[in-house]
Amino acid sequence: MTCVSKSPNKHNRIYLVAEPMDEKLINAINRKEIREDQDKKKRGRVLADEYGWDITEARKIWSFGMPPDCLANLFVDTTKGVQYLAEIKDSVCSAFRQATAGGIICDEALRGVKFLLQDVVMHADSIHRGAGQIMPPTKRAIYACQFKSGPAVLEPLYLCDITVPQNALAGVYSTLNQRRGVVEETVERAGTPLVQVKALLPVLESFGFTNLLRANTSGKAFPQMIFSHFQPLNGDVFEEGSTSNTIALDVRKRKGLKVVMPKFSDYYDKI
Image 1 (cartoon, helix red, strand yellow):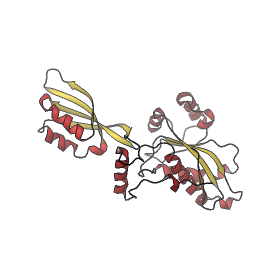
Image 2: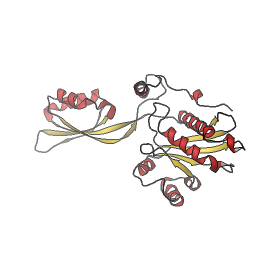
Image 3: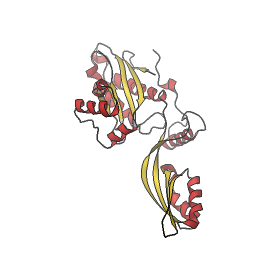
């Protein structure tokens, strides 16, 4: 859905649409293979050839997200024949970077969102389109777009490598079940009574995990944890009682935000 936002003086309007980005492209940005300081034409050609982008869009990327955590978000200009557009570019990019640093759901970093600038209506007089009139509506439009793009809360997962004797394996499984862990594979070491269990464990559940595991296995299990990847939480974040809704509200409470989900009507301006 195209989301519209008006400036405080009601003379300027920003029209935006949001789309999810391909996981392959997100990883390429995080690995610095695609950067903001690259030549536009070369970067555009790579995006068109390897990631299926439209070549015109690929050459008109205005900004990446806020470094260092939110780089994998893009703001793309898809407008046609808008006057004075270059004058507001800096204000729009600043607002975009600030908005990517904290999303609507629980003020956490955004990841993998592409915002397309569809149209801009501006006042002819430059005094009516300064940063104070352009940045607020850009942020509001970005927030409104997130509502209409099926947002999800991503949680980081650890790859947990546990070495344990065969007779204490039940304790490992029960501990992982208690902490939302998922067993990926179990490998028996030939010639020894040891078993190696590889599991994915949410970082949120990892606090105190080692102590609980030792308690459940009489001190026989040794876990090693390394960051693996991000994964969307189960359930609709706006549906009361779902896993992602409960976790998002907990985060909001911890950060001192209102312990209710924001509403689309708070950010959407009717024309």
